[in-house]
Length: 244
Ligand SMILES: Nc1ncnc2c1ncn2[C@@H]1O[C@H](COP(=O)(O)OP(=O)(O)OP(=O)(O)O)[C@@H](O)[C@H]1O
Ligand SMILES: [Mg+2]
Image (cartoon, rainbow, N blue to C red):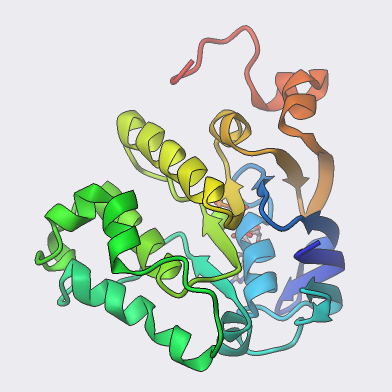
């Protein structure tokens, strides 16, 4: 396992949010953490990247417990995080934002460079067309692509994506889904947090569904899609949903 959470409990002040989350992510896999609003997906991501320190349990990355380390230390060890809110430097161009993403590499001598500007332009041709544009002028979908691309420029061993499709039009969501699969096929390991269970199970290999800070269902994407309770609760069987 590249990443393994064991019995992770996380609080915000006195609010107990995660109640013993345990799961693993194998190297090279595309795994999703699913759940409704407020289930604890972002808190799980924050617990991995060190933005919120788990009060109990361990987060093993390449076999070492990283729970309690600072976010920059965890990033240096090879975890890249794309947060929900698409943080970028609006006054910088697309290309400049990407160059900033590569800075973390200087701290990681000997890293195998899979992603450089040329590879990014190849995988994200749209960004190449926009490379001199200030990122503040990009559309939501383009900003999301840039945030993912910038994180890839740090050549992380594990890429955490927190609801990349939130607020984007169905066509853009479809395109991002294809892009995530393409990134995964390059050998990257990806952990995707998603509320859109259908979208996530169509692209991921495995999934974990969180409800109120507890993993309630887990399995391969196919097992989850075939699970009657999951279908009734989350996939709206019998109801025509957008994207179906
Ligand atoms: N900084 C915070 N302080 C206190 N409570 C918080 C904080 N951030 C989140 N919470 C609470 O923790 C719970 C889990 O939130 P979290 O952001 O992990 O959910 P989520 O699954 O990512 O939801 P969404 O799909 O809306 O992003 C929610 O009840 C939320 O209100
Ligand atoms: Mg969230």
